[in-house]
Image (cartoon, rainbow, N blue to C red; front, side):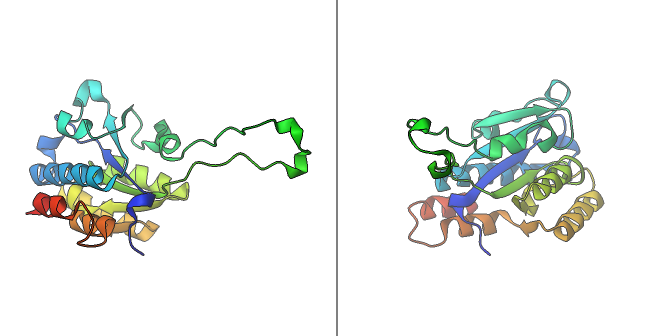
Length: 200
């Protein structure tokens, strides 16, 4: 199963200035997150952000935040517990026309906006906020794809334990380049050259 840009959404979790210096390989992880955000713009994939206790840990850097449609300030470790799921699942469109013009059994149910059910996650800390968000998204029947080279924790052991647990729970583990090449699918995509420039 390949990632489809038309079915995907990207969530960037807690890349915050007071947290990143303590993160294992933090600079490289931040660079991959920025690359993902730029790729999402090229592939027309919606981007959302989260910030854990931003009054203490600060806001995401502007270069990431500016790519996000919205950024969720949260105190719970799982962003789903704070309402992220509602952002990712569009509301039903209201019924149009005169609902009383047809008998109830002939009326069509309200149309659902197209759903992008493949959630691509990247962030920190992998074994806390990212893990808990991913597990709750899986419970809510989203497909979850975790971008391993754009995720980390304060220790390598915690990061790797999170990846093991996520894979066991049904998340797909991918890399930034895997996401990019799957979203674009081929060298004829109009954004292909821009993507190559991002990864060189």
